[in-house]
Length: 306
Image 1 (cartoon, rainbow, N blue to C red):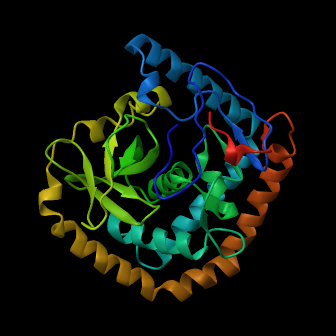
Image 2 (tube, rainbow, N blue to C red):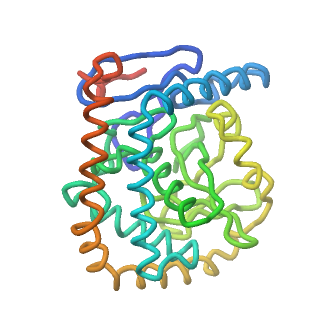
Protein backbone atom coordinates (compact mmCIF):
# COMPACT_ATOMS: atom_id res chain seq x y z
CA UNK A 1 0.00 0.00 0.00
CA UNK A 2 1.16 3.51 -0.71
CA UNK A 3 2.62 5.43 2.18
CA UNK A 4 3.39 9.09 2.45
CA UNK A 5 7.05 9.90 2.90
CA UNK A 6 8.19 11.54 6.15
CA UNK A 7 5.55 9.65 8.13
CA UNK A 8 5.00 6.14 9.37
CA UNK A 9 1.24 6.06 8.95
CA UNK A 10 -0.41 4.79 5.76
CA UNK A 11 -2.40 7.28 3.74
CA UNK A 12 -6.06 6.57 3.10
CA UNK A 13 -6.05 4.48 -0.01
CA UNK A 14 -9.52 3.97 -1.43
CA UNK A 15 -10.42 2.22 -4.65
CA UNK A 16 -11.50 4.81 -7.22
CA UNK A 17 -14.45 2.59 -8.13
CA UNK A 18 -15.90 2.17 -4.66
CA UNK A 19 -17.20 4.37 -1.90
CA UNK A 20 -15.88 3.26 1.46
CA UNK A 21 -17.39 4.57 4.63
CA UNK A 22 -15.34 3.35 7.52
CA UNK A 23 -16.02 3.69 11.20
CA UNK A 24 -12.60 3.71 12.77
CA UNK A 25 -10.94 5.92 15.57
CA UNK A 26 -11.12 9.69 15.32
CA UNK A 27 -10.77 10.60 11.63
CA UNK A 28 -13.68 11.96 9.62
CA UNK A 29 -13.45 11.57 5.87
CA UNK A 30 -15.94 11.70 3.03
CA UNK A 31 -14.58 10.49 -0.29
CA UNK A 32 -15.32 7.96 -2.97
CA UNK A 33 -12.16 8.34 -5.03
CA UNK A 34 -9.51 8.66 -2.34
CA UNK A 35 -5.80 8.39 -2.87
CA UNK A 36 -4.76 7.06 -6.17
CA UNK A 37 -2.22 4.73 -7.66
CA UNK A 38 -1.16 3.74 -11.14
CA UNK A 39 -2.36 0.24 -10.24
CA UNK A 40 -5.78 1.80 -10.84
CA UNK A 41 -4.82 3.78 -13.93
CA UNK A 42 -7.54 3.01 -16.44
CA UNK A 43 -8.12 4.08 -20.03
CA UNK A 44 -8.95 7.73 -20.60
CA UNK A 45 -12.73 7.14 -20.62
CA UNK A 46 -12.62 5.46 -17.22
CA UNK A 47 -10.38 8.21 -15.83
CA UNK A 48 -12.91 10.81 -16.94
CA UNK A 49 -15.73 8.80 -15.36
CA UNK A 50 -13.86 8.68 -12.06
CA UNK A 51 -13.18 12.42 -12.25
CA UNK A 52 -16.87 13.09 -12.95
CA UNK A 53 -17.97 10.95 -10.00
CA UNK A 54 -15.55 12.81 -7.76
CA UNK A 55 -16.76 16.18 -9.06
CA UNK A 56 -20.37 15.28 -8.28
CA UNK A 57 -19.37 14.17 -4.80
CA UNK A 58 -17.50 17.42 -4.20
CA UNK A 59 -20.48 19.47 -5.35
CA UNK A 60 -22.66 17.51 -2.92
CA UNK A 61 -20.21 18.18 -0.08
CA UNK A 62 -20.04 21.89 -0.94
CA UNK A 63 -23.81 22.11 -0.59
CA UNK A 64 -24.11 19.81 2.41
CA UNK A 65 -21.26 21.42 4.34
CA UNK A 66 -21.58 24.99 3.07
CA UNK A 67 -21.19 26.44 6.58
CA UNK A 68 -17.81 24.71 6.95
CA UNK A 69 -16.69 26.21 3.64
CA UNK A 70 -17.80 29.71 4.65
CA UNK A 71 -15.89 29.60 7.93
CA UNK A 72 -12.90 27.93 6.32
CA UNK A 73 -12.71 30.73 3.74
CA UNK A 74 -12.68 33.30 6.55
CA UNK A 75 -9.87 31.36 8.21
CA UNK A 76 -7.86 31.20 4.96
CA UNK A 77 -8.39 34.89 4.24
CA UNK A 78 -7.17 35.73 7.73
CA UNK A 79 -3.95 33.73 7.24
CA UNK A 80 -3.43 35.57 3.94
CA UNK A 81 -4.06 38.89 5.71
CA UNK A 82 -1.40 38.08 8.32
CA UNK A 83 1.13 37.45 5.54
CA UNK A 84 0.13 40.67 3.74
CA UNK A 85 0.18 42.80 6.89
CA UNK A 86 3.75 41.71 7.55
CA UNK A 87 4.96 42.65 4.07
CA UNK A 88 5.56 39.07 2.93
CA UNK A 89 2.96 38.74 0.19
CA UNK A 90 5.03 40.38 -2.54
CA UNK A 91 6.67 37.20 -3.80
CA UNK A 92 5.84 33.50 -3.85
CA UNK A 93 8.96 32.70 -1.82
CA UNK A 94 8.20 35.29 0.86
CA UNK A 95 4.61 34.08 1.13
CA UNK A 96 5.64 30.41 1.30
CA UNK A 97 8.29 31.18 3.93
CA UNK A 98 5.74 33.03 6.05
CA UNK A 99 3.17 30.26 5.66
CA UNK A 100 5.75 27.60 6.57
CA UNK A 101 6.73 29.43 9.74
CA UNK A 102 3.10 29.92 10.79
CA UNK A 103 2.17 26.29 10.18
CA UNK A 104 5.24 24.82 11.88
CA UNK A 105 4.84 27.08 14.91
CA UNK A 106 1.14 26.28 15.18
CA UNK A 107 0.08 29.85 14.47
CA UNK A 108 -2.77 28.67 12.24
CA UNK A 109 -3.85 25.77 14.50
CA UNK A 110 -5.85 25.99 17.69
CA UNK A 111 -3.48 25.20 20.54
CA UNK A 112 -0.11 26.39 19.13
CA UNK A 113 1.18 23.14 17.72
CA UNK A 114 1.33 21.11 14.54
CA UNK A 115 2.04 17.42 13.87
CA UNK A 116 2.53 15.53 10.63
CA UNK A 117 -0.17 12.95 11.25
CA UNK A 118 -3.47 11.59 9.99
CA UNK A 119 -6.10 14.32 9.91
CA UNK A 120 -8.86 14.69 12.45
CA UNK A 121 -11.28 15.61 9.67
CA UNK A 122 -11.29 16.22 5.95
CA UNK A 123 -13.68 16.43 3.02
CA UNK A 124 -12.95 15.21 -0.49
CA UNK A 125 -13.40 18.78 -1.72
CA UNK A 126 -11.46 20.29 1.18
CA UNK A 127 -8.48 18.42 2.60
CA UNK A 128 -7.22 21.66 4.19
CA UNK A 129 -9.72 21.87 7.05
CA UNK A 130 -7.61 19.52 9.19
CA UNK A 131 -4.83 22.10 9.59
CA UNK A 132 -6.91 24.07 12.09
CA UNK A 133 -6.68 21.04 14.42
CA UNK A 134 -2.88 21.03 14.18
CA UNK A 135 -2.63 17.77 12.21
CA UNK A 136 -2.38 16.77 8.58
CA UNK A 137 -0.60 14.77 5.93
CA UNK A 138 0.85 16.13 2.68
CA UNK A 139 -2.59 16.40 1.06
CA UNK A 140 -3.95 18.44 3.96
CA UNK A 141 -0.96 20.76 4.22
CA UNK A 142 -0.77 21.27 0.45
CA UNK A 143 -4.49 21.93 0.08
CA UNK A 144 -4.40 24.58 2.79
CA UNK A 145 -1.25 26.21 1.39
CA UNK A 146 -2.79 26.32 -2.07
CA UNK A 147 -5.92 28.05 -0.79
CA UNK A 148 -3.83 30.66 1.03
CA UNK A 149 -1.67 31.33 -2.05
CA UNK A 150 -4.80 31.73 -4.17
CA UNK A 151 -6.16 34.19 -1.61
CA UNK A 152 -2.93 36.15 -2.11
CA UNK A 153 -3.49 36.18 -5.86
CA UNK A 154 -1.02 33.52 -7.00
CA UNK A 155 -1.71 30.92 -9.67
CA UNK A 156 -1.27 27.47 -8.17
CA UNK A 157 -2.73 23.98 -8.03
CA UNK A 158 -2.43 20.53 -6.44
CA UNK A 159 -0.29 17.75 -7.90
CA UNK A 160 -0.34 14.08 -6.92
CA UNK A 161 2.82 12.05 -7.36
CA UNK A 162 5.23 9.60 -5.79
CA UNK A 163 7.84 10.89 -3.35
CA UNK A 164 10.52 8.32 -2.69
CA UNK A 165 14.25 7.85 -2.26
CA UNK A 166 13.90 4.21 -3.32
CA UNK A 167 12.82 2.40 -6.45
CA UNK A 168 9.63 3.81 -7.95
CA UNK A 169 6.41 1.92 -7.25
CA UNK A 170 4.24 4.13 -9.49
CA UNK A 171 1.96 4.98 -6.56
CA UNK A 172 0.59 8.43 -5.91
CA UNK A 173 1.54 8.72 -2.25
CA UNK A 174 2.22 12.43 -1.86
CA UNK A 175 0.75 15.79 -2.79
CA UNK A 176 2.56 19.06 -3.49
CA UNK A 177 1.55 22.52 -4.70
CA UNK A 178 2.65 23.79 -8.08
CA UNK A 179 2.96 27.56 -8.37
CA UNK A 180 3.51 29.93 -11.27
CA UNK A 181 6.18 32.46 -10.27
CA UNK A 182 6.71 34.78 -13.22
CA UNK A 183 8.33 32.66 -15.92
CA UNK A 184 9.09 29.86 -13.47
CA UNK A 185 6.90 26.95 -12.42
CA UNK A 186 7.95 24.80 -9.47
CA UNK A 187 6.60 22.74 -6.59
CA UNK A 188 6.18 23.70 -2.94
CA UNK A 189 6.29 21.04 -0.25
CA UNK A 190 4.87 22.40 3.02
CA UNK A 191 5.79 19.16 4.85
CA UNK A 192 9.50 19.98 4.75
CA UNK A 193 9.25 23.68 3.80
CA UNK A 194 11.13 23.06 0.58
CA UNK A 195 10.95 24.00 -3.07
CA UNK A 196 11.18 21.21 -5.64
CA UNK A 197 12.56 21.90 -9.12
CA UNK A 198 12.15 20.00 -12.38
CA UNK A 199 15.05 18.15 -13.97
CA UNK A 200 15.40 17.45 -17.67
CA UNK A 201 13.47 14.16 -17.30
CA UNK A 202 10.47 15.76 -15.66
CA UNK A 203 11.21 14.64 -12.09
CA UNK A 204 11.40 17.06 -9.18
CA UNK A 205 14.18 17.47 -6.61
CA UNK A 206 14.45 19.56 -3.44
CA UNK A 207 16.65 22.65 -3.47
CA UNK A 208 18.39 20.99 -0.51
CA UNK A 209 20.69 18.37 -2.11
CA UNK A 210 20.90 16.29 1.10
CA UNK A 211 17.23 15.39 0.65
CA UNK A 212 17.44 12.27 -1.47
CA UNK A 213 13.73 11.79 -2.12
CA UNK A 214 12.56 12.54 -5.66
CA UNK A 215 9.01 13.56 -6.57
CA UNK A 216 7.55 11.89 -9.68
CA UNK A 217 4.31 13.57 -10.82
CA UNK A 218 1.58 11.12 -11.85
CA UNK A 219 -0.76 12.76 -14.32
CA UNK A 220 -3.31 9.94 -14.28
CA UNK A 221 -3.79 10.47 -10.56
CA UNK A 222 -4.42 14.16 -11.19
CA UNK A 223 -6.95 13.28 -13.90
CA UNK A 224 -8.80 10.93 -11.56
CA UNK A 225 -8.72 13.55 -8.80
CA UNK A 226 -10.09 16.17 -11.19
CA UNK A 227 -6.99 18.38 -11.10
CA UNK A 228 -5.73 17.94 -14.67
CA UNK A 229 -7.65 20.87 -16.17
CA UNK A 230 -6.27 23.25 -13.54
CA UNK A 231 -2.76 21.79 -13.91
CA UNK A 232 -2.22 22.51 -17.60
CA UNK A 233 0.50 25.08 -16.90
CA UNK A 234 2.33 22.57 -14.72
CA UNK A 235 2.26 19.77 -17.28
CA UNK A 236 3.34 22.15 -20.05
CA UNK A 237 6.46 23.11 -18.12
CA UNK A 238 9.58 21.61 -19.69
CA UNK A 239 12.25 23.56 -17.82
CA UNK A 240 15.42 22.18 -16.28
CA UNK A 241 15.55 24.47 -13.25
CA UNK A 242 17.21 21.92 -10.98
CA UNK A 243 20.50 22.32 -12.83
CA UNK A 244 20.61 25.86 -11.42
CA UNK A 245 18.96 25.21 -8.05
CA UNK A 246 21.09 27.82 -6.25
CA UNK A 247 19.18 30.50 -8.15
CA UNK A 248 16.14 29.38 -6.15
CA UNK A 249 17.75 28.24 -2.90
CA UNK A 250 19.53 31.51 -2.14
CA UNK A 251 16.47 33.81 -2.39
CA UNK A 252 14.29 31.31 -0.53
CA UNK A 253 16.74 31.20 2.39
CA UNK A 254 16.56 35.01 2.44
CA UNK A 255 12.76 34.78 2.52
CA UNK A 256 12.92 32.38 5.48
CA UNK A 257 15.08 34.86 7.37
CA UNK A 258 12.59 37.66 6.67
CA UNK A 259 9.76 35.49 7.97
CA UNK A 260 11.67 34.63 11.16
CA UNK A 261 11.99 38.34 11.95
CA UNK A 262 8.18 38.58 11.90
CA UNK A 263 7.61 35.57 14.15
CA UNK A 264 6.40 37.58 17.16
CA UNK A 265 3.94 39.41 14.89
CA UNK A 266 2.48 36.11 13.66
CA UNK A 267 2.17 34.89 17.23
CA UNK A 268 0.27 38.03 18.24
CA UNK A 269 -1.95 37.87 15.16
CA UNK A 270 -2.90 34.29 15.94
CA UNK A 271 -3.61 35.17 19.55
CA UNK A 272 -5.61 38.34 18.84
CA UNK A 273 -7.35 37.57 15.54
CA UNK A 274 -6.96 34.12 14.06
CA UNK A 275 -7.71 32.11 17.20
CA UNK A 276 -11.38 33.16 17.24
CA UNK A 277 -11.77 32.07 13.60
CA UNK A 278 -10.08 28.76 14.43
CA UNK A 279 -12.55 28.16 17.25
CA UNK A 280 -15.51 29.00 15.01
CA UNK A 281 -14.28 26.64 12.29
CA UNK A 282 -13.65 23.77 14.70
CA UNK A 283 -17.07 24.25 16.31
CA UNK A 284 -18.71 24.07 12.87
CA UNK A 285 -16.75 20.95 11.86
CA UNK A 286 -17.53 19.26 15.16
CA UNK A 287 -21.21 20.07 14.87
CA UNK A 288 -21.92 19.36 11.20
CA UNK A 289 -19.31 16.75 10.33
CA UNK A 290 -17.88 14.88 13.29
CA UNK A 291 -21.27 14.55 14.94
CA UNK A 292 -22.63 12.76 11.86
CA UNK A 293 -22.04 9.10 12.61
CA UNK A 294 -22.56 8.08 8.99
CA UNK A 295 -19.40 9.88 7.88
CA UNK A 296 -17.28 9.31 10.95
CA UNK A 297 -14.24 7.25 10.16
CA UNK A 298 -12.45 5.79 13.07
CA UNK A 299 -11.51 2.78 15.31
CA UNK A 300 -8.33 1.25 13.97
CA UNK A 301 -7.90 3.66 11.06
CA UNK A 302 -4.19 4.03 11.63
CA UNK A 303 -3.72 0.27 11.43
CA UNK A 304 -5.77 -0.30 8.31
CA UNK A 305 -4.07 -1.43 5.13
CA UNK A 306 -6.57 -0.84 2.34
